[in-house]
Length: 203
Image 1 (cartoon, rainbow, N blue to C red):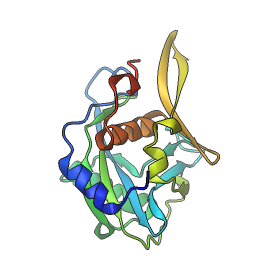
Image 2 (image 1 turned 180 degrees about the horizontal axis):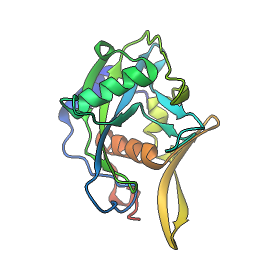
Image 3 (image 1 turned 30 degrees about the vertical axis):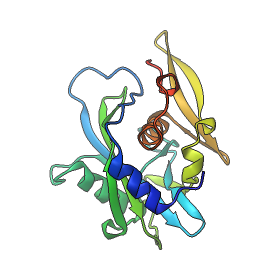
Image 4 (image 1 turned 60 degrees about the horizontal axis):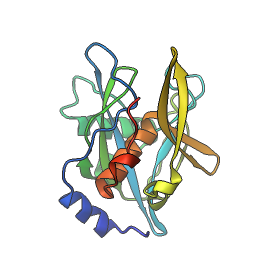
């Protein structure tokens, strides 16, 4: 399936309510508000999604694949503002390069975060400037690959005697999993609604 910018804009304009995808049961207490940008980059060869590989020394989620984003700060008026600020700080995407297409339902993580995924169409050239402390590298899988259900695998992990299921998406030596893969499932379900059986199983 080859996806165009026009199709993407039209699909988000007409999309209804999307299902919330959870990584695992929500941690007790008030969740920490955060937001990420799902940057869909308009390349001459097709649409891609920019992802980051976090540095290995970080305290949280070291070495994992993620979207640009982070905690909401008091000065951020909206989750969209958080996503745009964090994207500029982490990888150098300028807010004026981003056309916000949609805000997906909040994604609740087992670590106590309520993450708002903000979908944005990004216009090159990017002229990326990576935050060396947080970001080791960036890469861009094709959007059509990430919207293909065949690209997704289900894995399991045991935590405190309980087995949890999660999504994973291998791509060219990278391993996208956890909250990032879960939010990609949410993106896929909003753009290409699928059957209930294909959604993330309850953990």
